[in-house]
Image (cartoon, rainbow, N blue to C red; front, side, top):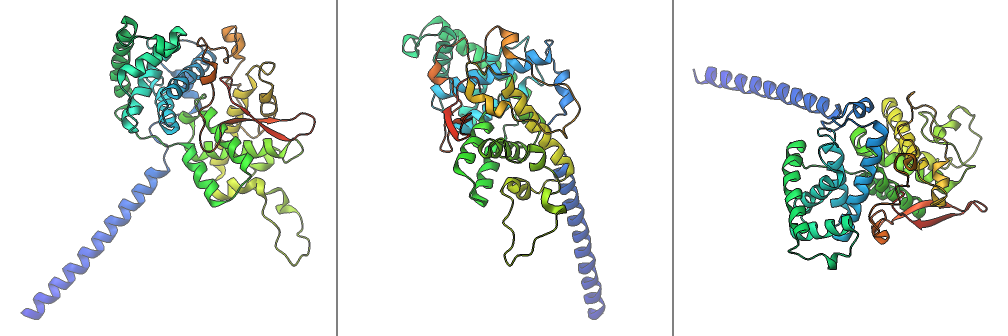
Length: 379
């Protein structure tokens, strides 16, 4: 009887382990399946045409860029760490996928995103201080000239709090944001790319928040696009095109390998592709990300900001989706360039600086030698 009981117990234990293994395999497969799906905050490109805002898409993109510009200025004046500003910029774009620009002014939303980010990113700032800086940007006065107890500051505080309530609802209290900058850090750590390419990639990633790319593609796609575009700027116009840099098959793969006792050196221009190991669908997304970035730079005023000419004239990949350009000239929409913001604090109108640099690609037209130039609000 004891032997039979032991047999039954052992058999039950084995069956139980098998069931647990099957359940674990199913859970792992389910997690893998969900991991491969786009997140709740990633949208198809067509979704930009279906936002609650009634203005044209090109006007919405212009206002998004202006809103992020204001957000950057506000965050810089408050001396926030750049990750907090990137988080706030992401929320800013997400907000307008659910609420109309007609109902919520970009400056109120930007200020609310900044204030919320100071809490979630543990870089707290007082509401009164945020309101004072915000009011200084709107009025064009120095923040020291804005009294703490002024009616304007009080109204600004109220607007920030009221908008924050709607922002929390729009975000569904989902504060988690992944940044392409984190992917770039990992990329730089795994390889030792050119320092200038690193700085350019870091700055282009800053500028990517002036576009809706964070709504369209995962951070790893955006990070790769920023790095590849930076490499192309550093390498110059005679280097491989963007099409060659992101092709699924290296250009030399079809050529016979010359006899040599040494292995061929790796293709530096394809480092990001090899690091991220993109599939065909991701390569298509990468191509479209590059196109959006180049389109954005191309609509800036190159007479006022000639350092943008090099990056703006780089031919976009030809393997992108067949679609009309997202961007048209900002000067046509506003009568002024984006750099000519309503706030005169030109010293704060730059892409936020960081340990990885704050420069926009510039190449000397004669020597093709890369030079850095501080980014201003035209970025």
